[in-house]
Length: 403
Image (tube, rainbow, N blue to C red; front, side, top):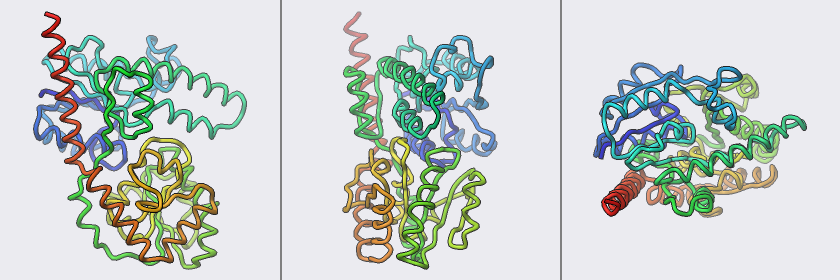
């Protein structure tokens, strides 16, 4: 098949959860199909990043990423949800149209909601919306953290605009794979006629295997995240200020290791605590995280599947998370991971793991089995390919019958 893939963040290097999804799927599909990538590039991307993707794909076209506000917003988007209007790029639209004018494709994959507007409504092939998250739910989660009547009213108004937009958007596509059962239920309710198969974020397990036997550092807790994502900053601050003091009282020599990208000053300041260390913008997080005996994902803002949990599980490190962090994972509390709702409950779960090596081993091994059977890249890619081919055959059948 000839596939045109549209992404809103350049998929290489895969150093965040969203990029991991794109990169693993594109890499695997490009090995068996003709894939042309059209993607935004960020300031952090290098020519080497683009060259690497060109070694995988048939063609790669890039557009500089920008965010617009006020008069800079395209007039056609003035009444659209600000979440969408501020990210719309006429340059990206022109690039996609130019590629489509030069050659035909069997399918277009729009990765994440901001890539979806560039898929022409009259495209005759398969239109795939790989949402990776329900934007409306993510917006609602962020909205709950806002303060002030005026701010809350603005967020509520935008919430309803975004919800209407997202429902209409899903109904325009032929295939909408989702990464969690919650997202699947939402899309099936919004668009019952559109297939929404569950295709979770995948990991290339061969990249994690070398770190499974990394020597552990006693009483070391790890937190991993990209800090230009508000949910990660909030999660870390909640853990440090409300949970970590309780853990330290129970295990005085505990240490916290933070591994992340683009840390704001408030996050860097935590390293003034002699029990806290920070590693910023590292090339590969795996060697760092694999040293820890417990990992924490104390999420409180809904953001779909938390890939940080999957990464730690694939490294053989037991995970403690919140109800929100657990949501969307194909994992069972007390078997594959531990869940703590309140600061006190979260602290108790962390202390349990710090004190009980046999519990750590049991949780880690169960989690590894989940990763191998449900989240391995070859498993997920095979499912994606099967759904794509099935959808293409169904569209071909409809066109043939119409004639």
